[in-house]
Length: 128
Image 1 (cartoon, rainbow, N blue to C red):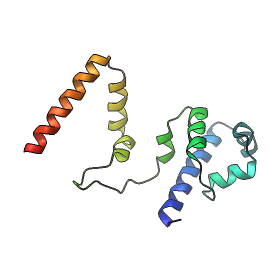
Image 2: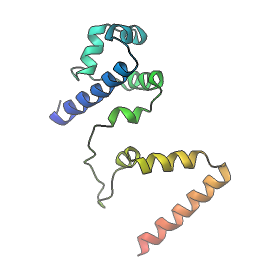
Image 3: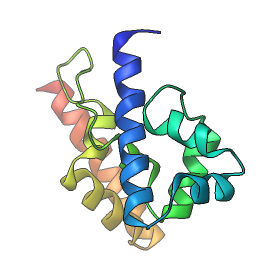
């Protein structure tokens, strides 16, 4: 396991701990919800053990947050070859989340129009 992966586990665990604390739950209470021991909750919270995708999804649903919220302290570092921010970085920004939410609230015909507009802009940008 790399140092970077370990630090991400610690940061995800930090959010888990914050969510648990803000809900007023003990590790034992959250463990009962997750059907695991309080000791396992502690290991997740301190990054000693990595949360599976399934557990992360279940926790997000339980606390009423998105899975992405668990990565709020992770600094995006990877960029694609063109130097643009990665999709993950975009989704972590307020603008990215707002754009995604606004798009999802559009009627399907408008969503298709937005997709066509973006496709046209992308083609024009490649030619420039």
